[in-house]
Image (cartoon, rainbow, N blue to C red; front, top):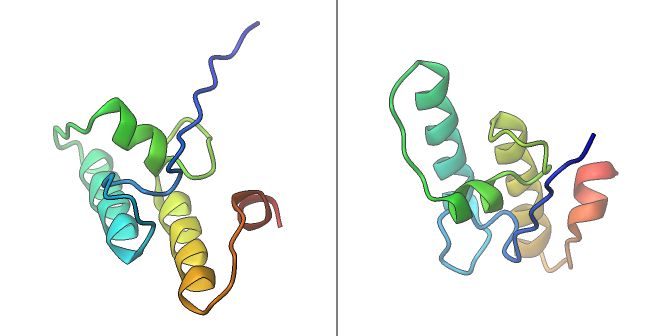
Length: 88
């Protein structure tokens, strides 16, 4: 059994604009909503990898929530860390 794990340098930066913010969470929710309702949605591999904040292999509402947590920590002067945000 093997796994192909791909790391995204801009984890959480779903729209690839070099910033993790609420726009990324909205991007993720829009993608998830469309996929969940059977709509044909296309995003790049890089967008998918960066949107998958919990690296579960799926882009869903959990990822959007994690991105918002990261953004909130950053916007209030903190220094967010993905490991802490994802795993507590």
